[in-house]
Image 1 (cartoon, rainbow, N blue to C red):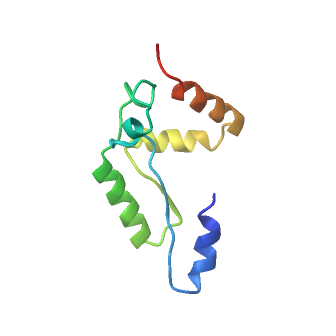
Image 2 (cartoon, rainbow, N blue to C red):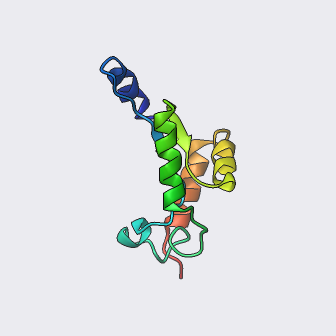
Length: 101
């Protein structure tokens, strides 16, 4: 993950980096990206942006390298994805990002 490099490089300067992996979050992201008519933009349950931000902030304050932000289902999905092939995940993401008829 990209942020692990800067995390190590900045450690000696007293700076810390935490990677926040939020999953689907209730924000304007999908609308601004023109994705309202995709599986990501329309029917998917999304996490509270306040909860995700709070989890990210607390992880940073605790000095954690990474955190999955969101509800228990998001955290279970992230754990499951550690064991799935990257090519499969990319294919699934591409399918869900396609406009729905």
